[in-house]
Amino acid sequence: MITGCFTALISPFRNDAVDYEGLEKIVDFQIQNGINGILAVGTTGESPALSWQEHNTIVEHIANQCRNQCICIAGTGSNNTKECLEATKHAQKAGANAVLLVDPYYNGPSSLEIRREYIAPVASAFPDIDIIPYIIPGRTGTKLLPEDLAILHEEYENVQTVKEATGDTANVKRIRELCGPDFSILSGDDALTFDMMTNSVIRCSGIISVVSNIAPKAVAEMVELIQMNQLAEAREISDALMPLFNLVTFTTTEKTPFGNVVCRARNPLGIKVLVSLLGMPAGRCRRPLGKVTQNAMAIILETVRSVNRTHPEILKPAADYFDIDIEERLYHQSNLEGLCYETY
Image 1 (tube, helix red, strand yellow):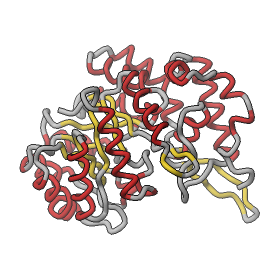
Image 2: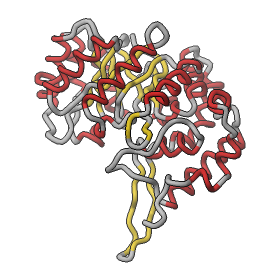
Image 3: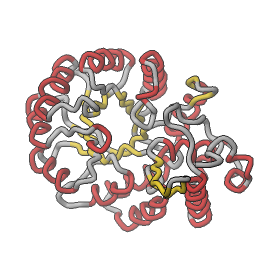
């Protein structure tokens, strides 16, 4: 079973090109702080904004660095099955241990079609690599249903894990009911992980985390403590991390000349701002993702300053590894340059 804490790694950029030197550093930072595995070029890694050449090269770098140290999961999902097959072939050759297949976005196939025309062909063509369906209807506009996932699990030995990010407890319970106790469910939502892992019916096996980009040790410890049934200690870490979990995607109300609007800072925007703010390799998101608003930056600053004040141990591993002064990074205005819009 694929279990534990996995980081949905950002793709660092420098002058809008992939920063491979920075990538090597952030992967090593993850490994040194006890992560069980790394997801390369998922949503957090800005897969929609990468060329396939960049995509494949990042997978090669991460798979090579993870070899014999932790699991590498490669994001190879697409809304084009042919592309997915080609990307999975490359990932397996590069040495990835598993591939993540997000539900096909935009063209929106039915669950039957996702099963028959997308996941099944990949699982059949590559029986020696784990296939992890990724269910996130809020982004894709479609959804692999628990019933079809159960059929896949029954028919293919390499479909033993799912990344579940529906936010729907009933859906996760249905997956557990149909797929059985030995099927691995990974939380795709940082903020729900403690509850999903400790729920007696759901029993999630771990998390593919966004916040572990900056706090791998704390998130990994939370997951490990839950696995050891040390729930009080795990709850303390979860509560300490929750303000950061809530920054993965959040909204602000912004004033415009024509009235107020709601502005959504959606993953990976918030985490990349945080990583940049802390002085770690990141760069800004690729367009059309941009910067955060002034209001969003105020929320980010207030949150991370509070977490560092009350639980400095969360950010200490990053400070130690990258040799950064957290206080200086969080309180000097110059460190905000280029991270937020001047006006709406």
